[in-house]
Length: 280
Image (cartoon, rainbow, N blue to C red; front, side):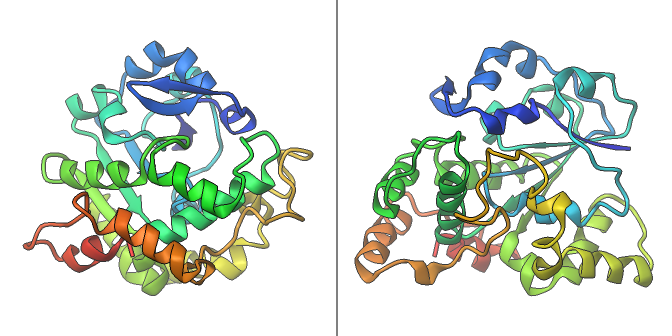
């Protein structure tokens, strides 16, 4: 088994942005978009999707005991033997249609918008080749307007939420992973139809705790992208926090989150409360 990226790992090294169907994407992604769109998924492929800086690294690491992990580009992904696991930040409407045609299993991880924004802001600050985020107020406007890589947080999480009722999508919440990792990992294993003994489960829980992962070079990128990521500005692994906002920012952000575009889940969903409050 392998852990692959649909697009090049070098995407995170390039500040120039492209656009696909109105969504800001990395320039390499837009350049090879025809190849991405025509990617041939297989029935046993697993796709893991999130908005940027939504805890993808930590949640994927929870499967590292079961899946050999490394990054590769599109061509290598096509050549890899099955079963393949791939990750993406693409919004649901940009996912290659073959994933739907092949009825692939997909895991989506959503994160509270305020925490997501803070993590994304500091990632821009420490990554020297990403656009300068400016002040937190300036970045907040870009974030709310969908003028950052991968577009609008709101449209991203809501689009995937709606898709889960039509496709084989396990929709998880980052906050739930932190609150009860055992329960959430068991959900993943049930979704993947895999058994996990207690010893392996406990090992995964330990190795994917924030305290352990922030010191793990494989997760914190301290040994990768030297000269690109300035960890003295902000570590790659950091906790987003809502207390970062002043009262004015909270009010402004609240208008965005709880206005007419408010993201709400189905009343029949066990995740309804989390879905309704994911944005604050």
